[in-house]
Length: 351
Ligand SMILES: [Zn+2]
Image (cartoon, rainbow, N blue to C red; front, side, top):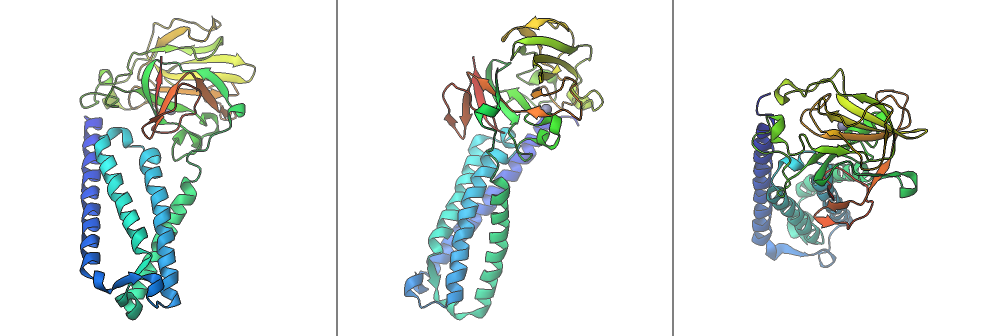
């Protein structure tokens, strides 16, 4: 378990570097090969190709359009390891993959004489089209809901309980961007960490709680209401000891803001809470410090809204919510201050 994050970071970065080099090789080899037989390549409408070749070329074009859709979605939004990889590395990998897709789209409207003449070549191409079209098509179907979120009318708007620049690690409606979505009571939960200017969320190897920028950060009330439940006597666990899977929320606060609306703030730091059960709080009231308690592998804030008070009540339902006055950065673009919903890998700023 020691040096978990340093180790993970190394593994992901080496993995992506190797994959990028392999795909760069594929791109260069393909360019060399196309150039070698450029004499026998012509536009498909000038080639007298049999109908099967037309169908295969159309299949390949559609496959590559799916590929263009899937790869950026997966890389920029679905991939949970994105925060552990240098941005330059996955951007370069993304550019290589997109270059391959664009090159193949261009090639799909041309044909070589050998494809028209050799039966074996057509069979190999057929198998490739069927396999890739099925895989990329199915992936596109799955990724279709990646950016789904209930409409603002169906969400409760609350205040961001933290200040500064943060990153949503698990957020959104679908389980592939938010593992919480697998449990009804945890649906729409968000796990967040503070980031520095380089968008890293810890320094060093990430083996100590203090390596994480959000450790001991101040947490403020996101709503006005009554403190329903407080647990504040659990020591922060060391990262090397792993998460507490029994008392999963660790130290936490539940605030009742309406008859059927409760906000849970979990994984807080032991002791020194500024509030107690029964207190009335306003939006922005200082509550406690963030820690690493409960089912938490490293310091982070878990926030959710649910329709029943007890945090692990399996009959309760998680409710969708938006934050007011945040500026969200998705794919490198800032939204401007407003109430955008959060999805995995979104960065946001709140003053
Ligand atoms: Zn969580």
